[in-house]
Image: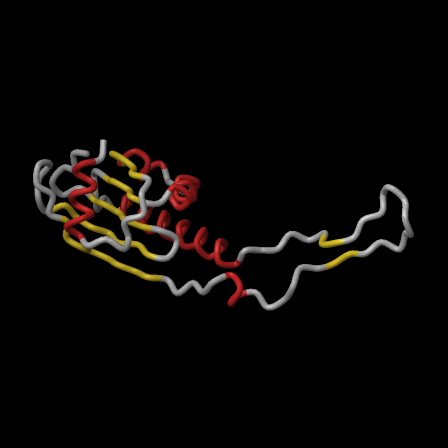
Length: 152
């Protein structure tokens, strides 16, 4: 993928966001970090304190008798990851409205990318030059540069 000089590159997942600026050119990326944030998001088990509700029927027998959970469990960990993606989209909106970037590349795992897309502002969408559906948040910058350059 060609990333123009001064393009904005965001590498994110549900817990970590890194905002880069390409100080290089389209042939030789030189990503410089502008902002980094890591959210503390414990596992769902550590965040939930109660079991799902139970319902039992007073009927005895019969084809319609059932028991078990009638309440779907909330995945607090996933809720927090979705909130974090929405917050990342909000930061992109604010920066786009201030005219801080003309071209944007977003790199995120598929689920995070989908959540980001739900929250793209028109000014962000208009500047979007490409998306890569990979999780690169744990990779060193040199590998991120190489993987972006190799992407189509």
